[in-house]
Length: 359
Image 1 (cartoon, rainbow, N blue to C red):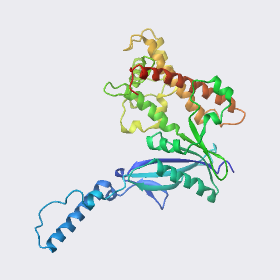
Image 2 (image 1 turned 60 degrees about the horizontal axis):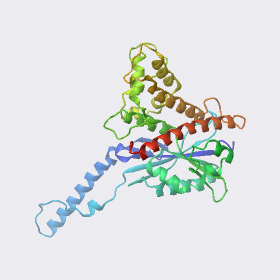
Image 3 (image 1 turned 180 degrees about the horizontal axis):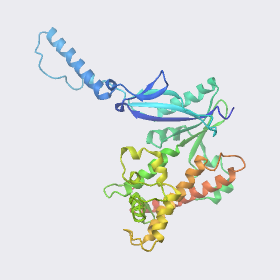
Image 4 (image 1 turned 120 degrees about the vertical axis):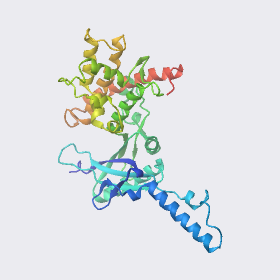
């Protein structure tokens, strides 16, 4: 169908030292050849340069001792550090449409906004040749990605949303650029950060706010909001006791490492309604003692989890596909949640202005 051929372009990069490659035969990302690692290649080039230098010295009848001097060809040789990959996924919500084929990939020294924009524009022009129409680009909110999207964007939320809605939800920044118009078709192409990376970044922010040595210190006004507060409530309500729990939370959600920080499922289970309910149970139970004596402070973390859970459910279409019939209801609910986050941002900006926060 036409809807099945409308696609999202998703892109991300991997460090080449991770030995991840794009297999052109299977069109999949696979574990790469160890000999292709940057460190191995650097060593190979160094050995080759040393061999050439010694051969030249011998030919000239000079001594073979010494090292290859800095500033030579070796030091100026630019090797690729990043593997940038672009995939497409159908926007059709039905399970019959599966798969995310790779449509472009490139090995580069450094991912830049210019490269991201160039490949995205190229795919928008080329995909219609194969019967596809790119309507959305999505990526994580890394600096280069966001810089590319801001440079590409020409259409803000103000240009899309009715003035009545803008006046009602006046805390929301509707100047955010979210799309640009295709010069050929005139259709809008939307540019957004993807939900999975957003969820992981939020939980990482909560984790860093738990660490006194970190500069990150998330607060709602003056009330702390961090991951350790959630762990305290989890332990206080029987978590880690091998007893049957009402949530899916385990030690893996609090014992953060490189793997758990990349696990979307673990992040979304922290930002869930059941986690919020667990926190509120710990607050209401008079027999439970928590490290922060004023237990009401924990409500800010519960509210954060509740509101993010609603945003995730709306974006995932948990209650069914988005349709013209439920569009207004879901958009209104999403705007209410956005209002909550922008009101929080207003409190944060005040802390920065008063020099109580640094970012």
